[in-house]
Image (cartoon, rainbow, N blue to C red; front, side, top):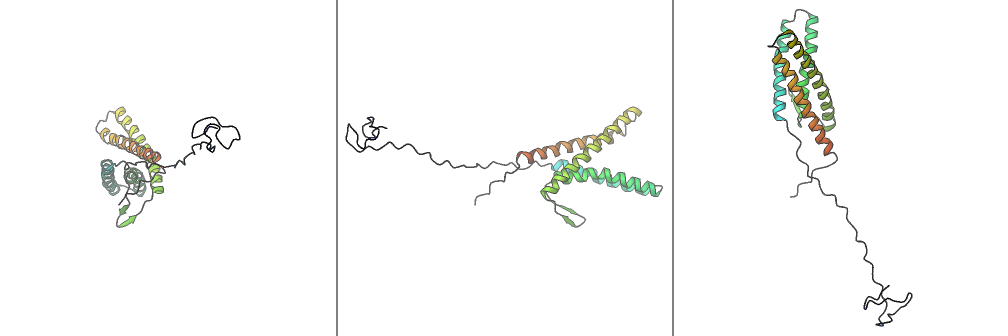
Length: 192
């Protein structure tokens, strides 16, 4: 221990400095200052918006609905109606579910207001991802069949069943990455 006044080394149990005679005051060791754990708010960007892709999905859903209605009118038997309705429901589900999953708002269908919370929207995104992979598979098989048989005309519609699902899959994965990156962070409350 050293004297705080003159800096001479003090005797181990001395109460006064041998040099200056002042009371021995041990140098106060600097107290560790309390470090506040400050969580800096993480700036959260708005979630990606896929307005154009959602419009494309809704447009495809309307086209498929019109085609399905025409096919049901022309169906020769009850078995044909059931098969067309089942197949049409599967093919119409992919754009409708994809458009709903890519959006952040609730739905209004035929005057009924449907609220979709975050947990349901995540489930809807998983279902949309699976449906888009299935439709993309059908589209690839259809394109291969068109190429194998030399029918170039139907290949344009098969291309639609490949490109749109691929865009949907990419968008759904981007939303999943966004949610994973910003999970647990709340946007900073706006100050008045």
